[in-house]
Length: 155
Image 1 (tube, rainbow, N blue to C red):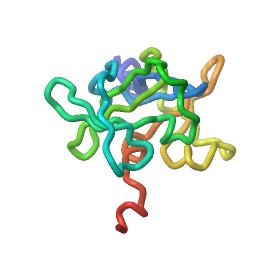
Image 2 (tube, one colour):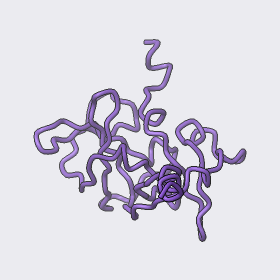
Image 3 (cartoon, helix red, strand yellow):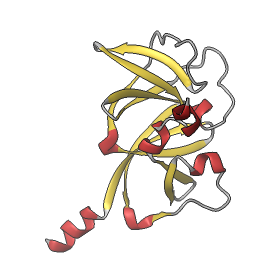
Image 4 (cartoon, rainbow, N blue to C red):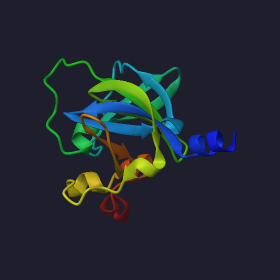
């Protein structure tokens, strides 16, 4: 039984999403909702990666466009996207992603540090990678992803 418990303690579950062609993993413990975003209202003078806000079951959620945040080109107009609801410092956020994947249980010891060739803007918001059979899953660090840029704090 102790081996079984130790095995489970070494595992973490991820909700997988794709943005562009890249597979990302979000720790499931940080995910509150998965939803189709409807009627996102733009926010004047917001940072470019802020797609706007929406009302989800009576709660206002700030929508973060993951394509913009990761420096990827926008999707063609009319393409349907999904959103993953997370919390950061008591505020609700929706991460706009291209597609939802599955829930994966992976060993924490199998997570490698960020590769040296990973885009520097991605390296600042990720917590390592998992090498899967056919592709690489980049683990997103929700706190660093949602942390406002330091130049915004200086204003």
